[in-house]
Length: 228
Image (cartoon, rainbow, N blue to C red; front, side):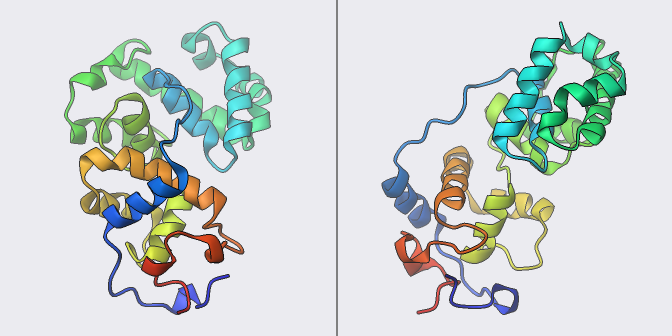
């Protein structure tokens, strides 16, 4: 377990992320993530993952794709029907409304549901385009940029937010939204995707929110959160 109260700690120096990345590679090896999605699929799937597990989000997304012919049909669906279809992902009412608003805005901007226009934009242009969609924040935008568009964004989910605090990359008061900007400045563009996957894996397997397995963690010598 953690040897100190994280809420009272001061982080004066954080470990070099290259060292952390190499240790995590040694622990987990090359990790294969889920199959690549089309950009709009990735966006809507990421909305479905909000405040739920990936497993439940995958089930909700599978229901969505199997019950509707195309995005236009989803956009024109009743809120009640869409909520029922994605209910297994949690927060069905809120997410059904959010998804329809996103699709409506995309149609207004593009005249359809093809997001290939993003491939001709700069990194900052894509980020701005995405985060100005209704209900799309920095994390959702970064996931779409990283996974679907292969841009060097660094999504900060709950696992990465927690580990970044424990390692001292961000302080205890740093929001997840602010953490995106900080972590992107720390990590070189070519390392962001792999480091993202490694940190998520580490958060799920060892550096858990409750009762982290510090005794078997490969990062203990660099982690200021562990009692010496």
